[in-house]
Amino acid sequence: MNMNVEINQSIDCIEVLVSGEIDVFTAPRLREMVTPIVNQDHVQMVIDLSGVSFMDSTGLGVVVGLFKTVKVHNGTFKIVGLSSRLKRLFDITGLTEIIQISSIAKDGE
Image (tube, rainbow, N blue to C red; front, top):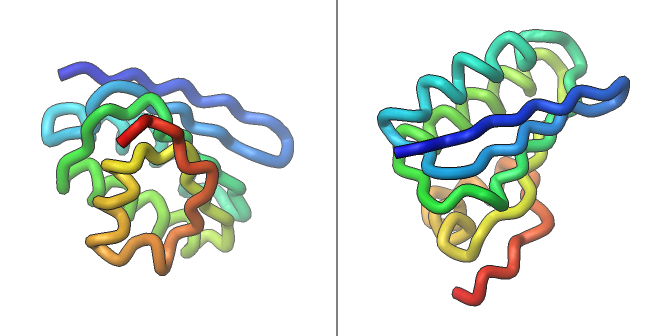
């Protein structure tokens, strides 16, 4: 179970590029790396999941937690690059109704 996280920070946006699997083993590391950033006021965060091949409920919980923290600090939060499999996961859980999601990846599913 492998996951890579790259954080690119500019003046107006923080982009978090995640690849690999976000699961019970890797999700805590994602939370640990991103939490210090989302605790700032007025963060504009984009999470790019186009490189994510698998996400379980623990990973989903981390994403929801990050979203809530950004919102509490009056920031914006967007997810881009979902595969059709991950999009279905977000649809089933109702998260597409509360989290801004765009740029669905073309993955042939």
